Length: 181
View 1 (cartoon, rainbow, N blue to C red):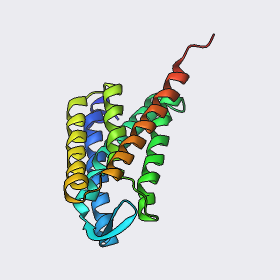
View 2 (cartoon, one colour; view 1 turned 180 degrees about the vertical axis):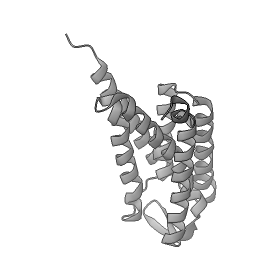
View 3 (cartoon, rainbow, N blue to C red; view 1 turned 90 degrees about the vertical axis):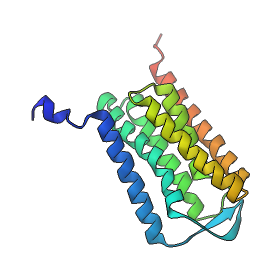
View 4 (spheres, rainbow, N blue to C red; view 1 turned 30 degrees about the vertical axis):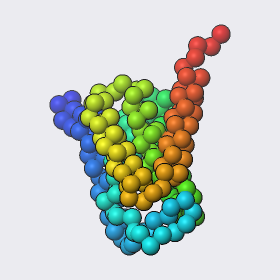
């Protein structure tokens, strides 16, 4: 295959496609699961979380997933090549645990806080539009959590855990890149 055909999509196109696919899959999964009750703190409410809202966090998650694949192709099994993928698996599991047991944890806050810090630190191509996407999803989550659902605790818990996940990722990468004596 020629370089022209290999480069037709490019990293940005690949990232957009993965992000859109992840969001569409998340929306369809939420629709198939049926009404998903909203928890405020650990108390179940009669409110149902909209599928479109639930799929919102999948957009930055999909961008991160695409970047993890790109990093793995560039760095292989070195720390920088797989650490983002490991963090994504952990973030995904932490976000999904709320569907099994009631925890005051916002998956949106968790994913978006990690996403925004990751994008700010990495300085990748397309950084501006990625930061805009992350900021819009954070605004959406804040609107729902703070104004519609009166649930600041889960949003703040999610943001704090997202910051911790990013700090752990940075620490691992910095330790791996440190010159050996």
